[in-house]
Image (cartoon, rainbow, N blue to C red; front, side):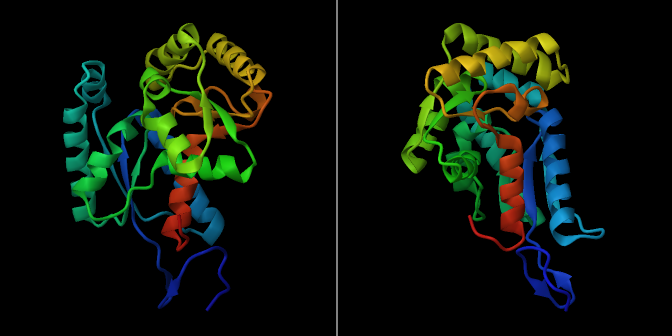
Length: 249
């Protein structure tokens, strides 16, 4: 038996890799990043031609966005719960909801299946705490920044203190996400705007910045802020690979 390259179980000549179920498409721009990061991580850890065992269901984001805007979160939860059930029936052993905002209905999805859902805020908080950061600035959609389902989860489960920018800056971030990044548009002017917002959060006491929207890493990264930047897309995808290869979360 060859020496293991990473956490995992060698079973009768093959790696016993758990199957990841991806609830994706919100937006597909960031879902494509999830797929790439997950497969690159598996190849890096196992070597050779290894890739992830995963199942992806990509929803029509236009419909989901209309339901969000109308405040029809019960319908969002019901539809994503059905997707989760389908992934479980197809053989998924863990669920990854490839979006931050839709974690508003994470409890509905969890209640619909018997397999675990890897919460993006838990994965992110573990990485934040590992770097000794206690106070973070949170950027994302207006739902993520203004409601308690995300910041409250970070605070209640992991003890983090969460800051958000002011109303005008929140609107700028939300518009960049929905009007640009979700449509594959990357503008230098928007990068500069986000740099200014992140600098303002840092000046107000944020020790790190959480990119709490899976599209934001298309535009900004570690070089764009004076404090550590936590890319939730990468963190979530890598945590899923850790779990799939036999680790615990």
